[in-house]
Image 1 (cartoon, rainbow, N blue to C red):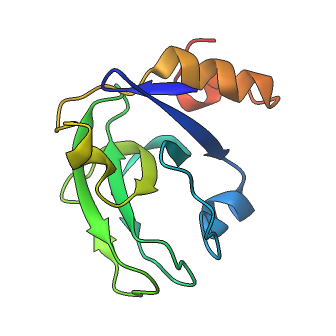
Image 2: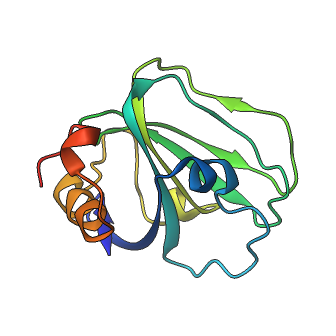
Amino acid sequence: MINLGGKALRMQLAVRPNELEHGLMERRDLGVDDAMVFVFERPQPMSFWMRNTPTPLDIAYFSSEGALVEYYPAYPFDEKSLPSRSQRLQFVVETNQGWFRTNGIKPGARLDLKALAAALTARGFDARKFGLEP
């Protein structure tokens, strides 16, 4: 579990290139408090889409400090990209559409980077490679 704005989410990590590319494609079984967190090595602009993704999602973009910068609703199978406005983002969280609104999570909310670093370490990654302290 990783906290986001004080709410616990069960997050699956997407770190390897194939995980980052596949994301939640073809998933129909996303639980109420389930999510996927995409972890990139350095801050960059982001753009996500919903190719082969049947579940409506919220796609949230986070800074390297773990602050929620912006999020967007994403619709099943929509191949139109959802580009970020910010150019300096490092983490992306996908969860069920409406999760942010339902839980009162707004820009500025924090992703628990200590828990994220621990999850990366548990999977055998060096958290420092992503700018995180283990």
